[in-house]
Image 1 (cartoon, rainbow, N blue to C red):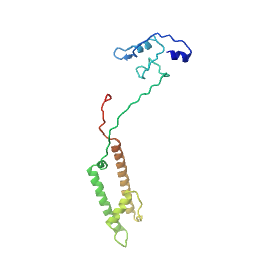
Image 2 (cartoon, helix red, strand yellow; image 1 turned 45 degrees about the vertical axis):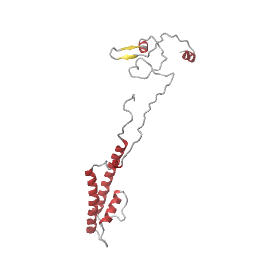
Image 3 (cartoon, rainbow, N blue to C red; image 1 turned 90 degrees about the horizontal axis):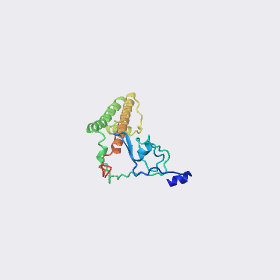
Image 4 (tube, rainbow, N blue to C red; image 1 turned 60 degrees about the vertical axis):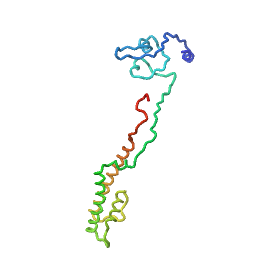
Length: 192
């Protein structure tokens, strides 16, 4: 209080010298200790470090602290966080992976049949050439030659939309899966 008197260029009179801060008892609806003295207006100023709490707000005015205390919380990180390679495949279940594999085989066959039926080629368009074209569409790369018929354009567009949807779902799921890791922390309570 002497420092406060010197800074404020005033005199202070110590009315109470209380050892405990006090608290508000919710069961009896009464304050004890220094909190009771502040609540009953026995003291105007208290030189003490009160933590800000909602039940103290009506009694204590936290306008300007005289001393700022830093509170730090330290948490020990786990020693190792391992993402296994199988995590990249656990994004989809086995039925979805089987459906993706089936579509990787079905669409090139359909492209081969449609190209041989609707377009005139000097050579036979092979299954593997269409497979590479379809993988290019999956990777959002352009085709070496744009299709002439509308049905082939629609099929390529459908493959592109399907690949974009699969890519978006996979990206969102793998990000969520990797970002929210379930690790065994070295502690489970605050006291540890």
